Length: 585
Image (cartoon, rainbow, N blue to C red; front, side, top):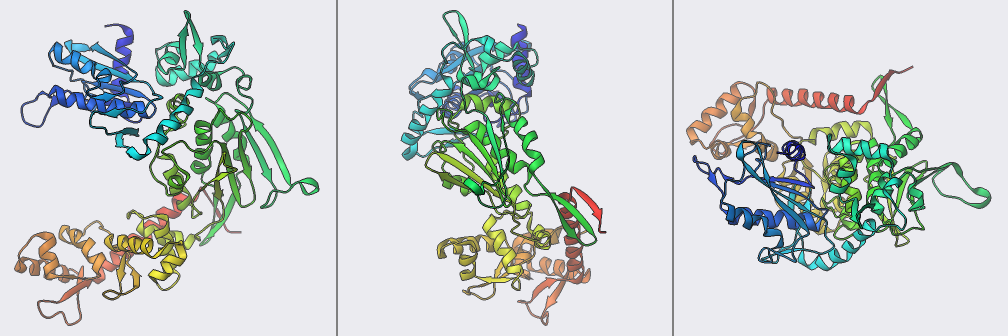
């Protein structure tokens, strides 16, 4: 076994499965006796994973390693192994054939592994059953066939970063940056070997030649190959841009560096302009940044990774006003990503620059692809700010706007923390906050007005909140809804009551028949359980408490525990949001 093979196996064992890497077992563990999986099943795994990767950003697939990184090998006969290695080129599985390298690898203890490396492809590849798959994070997601044409058109943009600028040589790359990159992705591999593995250089006439992506990522002088590949920062005084005699620019500078270090240098240069604000809570001032760090930095990383570098007359710009921050990037999103999908916080991913994206991901700027934008929304909501806004400017620029004006005050944020265990949309949270300020109830019409939704959107959102047990209809068929504070399990609470909390929260009370259904017990057993919970103060009879149809509401002990738990959650929220605390003067 060569040193390179040993290094590769170690990397495959340690690597996390995600956008660019997948492991598959060749063993069937569905019964007590472990046996080889059917070759046909493995073949379908290979076709689906490689097809999805080629349609996205490319990636690696290894057969013979378990999900936990344990080597298990491919114990199949040689003819089966040869069949599996030929899957990427077999039109019976994939059409058109995939740009892929497939090899058999000798592993320790006489085991065999199968390694596949699919390149990003300018074509859209379909499976034998005509399905189209797209790699998104660690999943092979089905892609709408009606949008395949748009995906094909967007893929032509990925060819630009793969061009070879005239006169470019390997000497034009910064050796220090290359060494740092190699150290990130493969400790023992030479930098040029790593570049070759990432398809950033190619052999031509016996010489290695860098692509445009390599020159922009690691070039000694990136501006030689693209004159607008940096980031322009402008600080405007006030809330509007003015010109002429009223020009209101207070600071302007340009950040220029190879793309592999450009985001970090931009963070360092822009961070001093992110102001801290003091918020009074009880007897302390809590200092808080006006923009969540992840939100504005993710917007800049996305601009660097996904901008259209074929547009040379425009560059990335960061404009900062008193009330907002705007990050402008040349080029509209490539299909299937749309501005509407981004605004609705959908998990989507498609790279205009797959070579650059893969390198920036390996450098740690990007993690789970498709997760950055949803997390931006989460961070802005957690800070009590309005959600990010995505829009097109002039038909050629994407503008991401982050507003620093709070949508919620501190007290409302603490109140909303009670629902942090419930998966809610931003609009649903806004409605809860509105209801809290108006007697803890609201109507369907108010929902439509507050979140600017039509009657059908409001109805679906309210039904979802009712299903999750945080909203209750005041009357059957009524249009008035009250907010229900979730009851949370706490230490010392009986297991039977924990199982009943969801129903108790949702309905506000519980009956004998509910206990029978949830706990799967008889009527007599349910009565004994209820009697015990009443005796311990966890439940209390509603009304007279007599008769088989009697209902039971939270008792004094449960209400006390709920209030204590609420206070603890509020304390956690305050502690997490306050970066520093200062006594009030």
